[in-house]
Amino acid sequence: MTIAILALLTLIEGMRRVPAGSVVLRRVLFGPWTVERPEPAERLRLLSWWSPIMTTIVLAPRPPYQKTSVKDVRARLEGRELYTALFDLRVLGAVELVVLVLGLPLALQRFGAMGFFVGLGVVLLLCLTIFTALVFSGRTLGKRWRWAFPFLSPFSASRAAEVLLEEALRDVPPAVAGSALLPADAFLVFVRPFVYDASNGGDVDRRFLEGMNLKELRAALAQRPGGTSQNGQGLWCPRCGATFIHGDSCSECGVHLVT
Image (cartoon, helix red, strand yellow):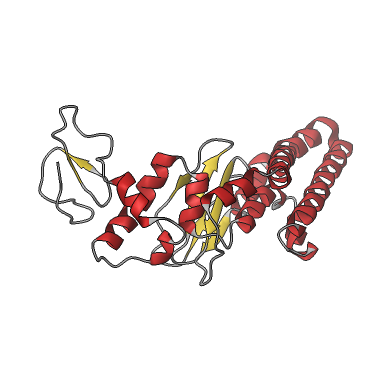
């Protein structure tokens, strides 16, 4: 019962208010990143499932974006300073989460009050270590130490890595951040509707293409997506890439299908 309560409390920490137009990226452990469509309206969502088991970052819309390139963003993320900090915070966050949710109840059951207080001391020590690492890492991003103060909480400390990554990408255009993090195929699926609308006079939020070469994206998206029939006669939507066996227009986009 205690394990369930602690797990629920740490899960609730993943509740966040997501502004309209935000792009949400997530991944499980060290797996590939995935992306969701931009939020149509502001709402409260459960984003992080026991971070860092599931890491979720929210790229909220910002009027001015930093002028940068995919190459520069990748170099920043793969640089020793930020990469090491993110790796260490993920490992520390995972250990802290396990000790908090499983270690404390088991220590209490096995060794009584003494085991509980020893386990609590370990949790607090991990939280202090995470806080210290986040403070020093935040300085490279121009953040003051107070920014890391909420992550002294045992229920928030495990989210330190995703918060640091989100802060590192805060002023980066969504398309540039997505291209740097997502697998190439997943990025093209995400950006295809925006490129199509921009190329055909549709209503599109240009910030989703900021920092990208529209001509190069058109060329990359000109070929049909995978999943059509092997004889090459399958139908597909040039806007979203969905494939169909028969029909005249895409049920999602209303765009005429092509072969």
